[in-house]
Structure formats: C-alpha cells, structure tokens
Image (cartoon, rainbow over all chains, first blue to last red):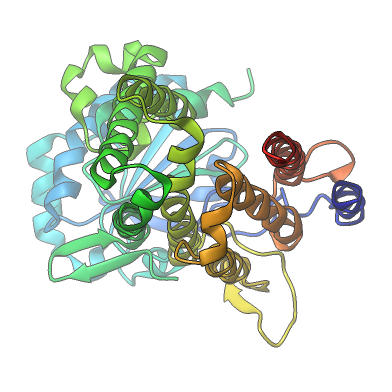
Length: 173
Length: 245
C-alpha cells in the first residue's frame, strides 16, 4: 500500500514544466547563467562577458594581497597558453576596490601574465558574483551557463585542466 | 546561507566543517550505543575510519586514472587537498568495500554492525542537510509562502530546513536508547532508518528546485528513494518473518 501511494505521489508531483532542471536566471551558482558584466582591462580595453558566448570562459576573482590567488596564477597562465587557441578565455577579475592597483600591476608584470586582467574598480562584479572569499573561480560553458564554482584556492593545475577540457568539450565544433 | 566563516585571514568553508562535525558527532554517538548491538565501540570507530580512508584514497586514485594527462604534468597534484579532484561515487563503493573487508576480517556480524552504525548515519543526515543550508545547495522550488526563504534571487521552499526537520524527526523516532529498540531483530533498526529516510526523500524531493528529471518530468531522486523503500520493506518483511517464533 505504501509503495502504491509512493508511486502515485511520484507521478502526481512530477515537474511537467521542467523548471527544476533549468536555471534561466543570471545567478552566480552552478546551473545558472553567469551574470553579465563589462570591465576595462589593465591595457584600457573593454571586455563584455556576453560577447564571449560560444567560447569557454574561466572567471577568476583575485587580489594581489591574497596568497592563494597569487599561488594559482602561474597554473592559470600555463592553461591559458595551452588552451587559448582552442577557444578558452581566462578573465582574471582583480577586486580592485579592495586591492592596490599598483601592486596588482606589478604582480601581473613580474609573472608575465598574458590573459586579460579586468579591473573591478567599483566592486560591481564582486557584488554580482556574491564574492565571499578570494580567490573564487567560475567555469562558464559556451552557452554562458556556470558549470562549476571553486571557492578558495590555490586550485591544483590538474583540476583546472580537467574542468577546462570539459568546458571545451561542450564547444560547438 | 553562510558558505564561509571568516576568522581573520582564514576562510573556513562552513559546509565542509558541518560535514566533519556530523561525522565526528555521529560516530561518538553511535560508539556509545554500539555495545547494545554486541559491537565494541572501538571496532565501530575503526570500521568507519577504514571506510572513510579507503573511500578517500580510492576516490582520488580513480580520478587520477580517469584523467592521467592532467596529472602527468603535475604529479604532486595527486596529493592536492582540492576535493574537486575526487571521483565521489567510486569513493563511496571503494569505501563500502573497504568496510566490508574490515568487517569480515574482524568477524563483525553484518546486521548488528549496520544497526550499531545507524545512529551515526542519522546524525550525519542532519549534518548533511545543515551543510546544504549553509552552502545554498539542494535548494527549494520557487514558492511564495510565509515561511519561504530568499535564495538565489527568488523566494523558495526552505527545502534544506524541511530535510533537517525530517532527519531530526527520524533520529528522535529511532533514538538509540529507546527500550523497544532492544527487542528488535538484528537489521530491523538499520532497515527502518533507511526506509524512513527514503520515505522522507520521496516526499520532500517534490519541493526541490534543482531536481534531476527523467522521462515525463519524473524526479530521479524520487525513483531511487522509491526503489530503496521497496527494497527495505522487502528485507524488513523477510527479517521479521524469518525470526517469527
């Protein structure tokens, strides 16, 4: 009897709108669209996230005073060198509103980072992405959907490579 | 939602802490009552530790075997503390296998051992739903109710609170010091816990906003819970009939 009632409940409570498995909103968590933003790079160019649809994107929020952020940057650079020609874009968003811009520039220069360093001067991206801990990294697929969020660091390079290869696997051929 | 506890420069992940606390409290709790099931407390602790360690090592090894190229350039990443480098389900099966081998080597009776472990599982279930509340995972479906919570940009069912209440109710109902539980046949205590938990998932999954859907919008967790419930009821019937005078 209990099993029969259970089966009826499963059928009765099914999600006919398929709403449960779709994240139509822009929210900084897995399964939802990545909130859009436009920021200037260290070189003065403007990058808009939504312009990168169709490409795999890694958004890394960091600051120059944060040791784990600095520790994972060389791994991000190596992954950028290996995968940028395959369609990967790494956006390192500096939490400039809580960082020293000069120190950030010095760190980028000393480490020869060649991926775009975006400046979140007013903290709008930190707020939109509900930043609670540095570093935080978002893996965004070509449809603009967040596939994974890694809070804290430093990330192992192996983790970075596996996630990036998975994102690139979702790219239209 | 409190995903991080910031203590000075230290950022501690609350969900992970709650899980660890759940394992520790659950095991301490179970150890106290284990002798009632004929299992020495220290054996139960070692059994759980064996399962956890073999599961953890197995989960990492399987992950390395699945993605050897990612580790070949960075072999030291095999020892990384990143939980993202674990194959969780393989770890669960390997952990269960490790525990089973330990049980066989120490000649621990299966049903009595599972009964002795039940309080630990019941406490862990509460810790798991609290960890979901802290991280915002296992979130509820959008709902405009007086008790809805604001999460991920919408008013939602507090599905994590429902799960915490259900797990707490199950622990209270199956409180290990109850006298009536002493008269149960071996295995009935454990199977009752699993059946009640499956029943809870079967009902509460309805209010989740992140369910994996199968055909016709049926939620896969409910199907799994229903199967577990059917299996447990069958085994309960068998255990009770088997021991009928």
